[in-house]
Image (cartoon, rainbow, N blue to C red; front, top):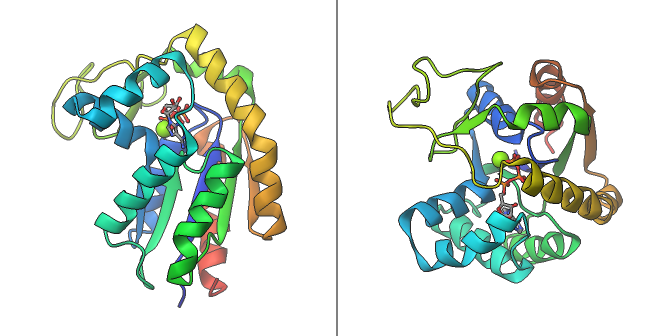
Length: 225
Ligand code: ATP
Ligand code: MG
């Protein structure tokens, strides 16, 4: 059986993180990596990578393609996920056509390529509404004060540590991120449609999207890939 090599794409706040963690509960053999979570961890550690990322993230800008590709490659190698058996899902990378090309060149030497791309299609009005209610834990766990509140206000359910507000979750920066997402979507979609691996899942909430996502991934896994 070939491993699943999947990408989950969607506008900021479309539910990538939430849906990924739901999916991994059902399919625990899949590993996941979120580029935004890696960068936020580096920022919290005050590393050189974190310092470099900070100004971009606070402006809502994308980091350079090559820099991101190297970061993700290093992480995939360190986790030893590039072997022939490990199924993984990437959230937040690739984000541009160039990043998709970079990723392909990382996978090809391992006789592998992306075999499933999911686009989460959520109306922007719905997303804008959500974002002011989003609080996160440094692990990447996401809470929504309305739909998915923590058990103890402003504390992570698992560690009890404080939640924080992402510096880029303010209305101005958010708008920039949203525009950038839609500007990059078309080249990515074209790239993966040509490979025949592109699936779009639409809905207003994660509860509506999740069953569609799960059955698409399960069907893919059953197909032997
Ligand atoms: P969300 O986490 O709400 O789904 P998002 O996709 O905007 O939204 P992250 O993936 O967490 O957010 O990324 C946050 C920021 O990190 C981006 O705005 C960008 O500055 C930087 N970043 C993350 N991934 C990449 C990437 N692949 N290429 C360039 N910059 C990136
Ligand atoms: Mg995210």
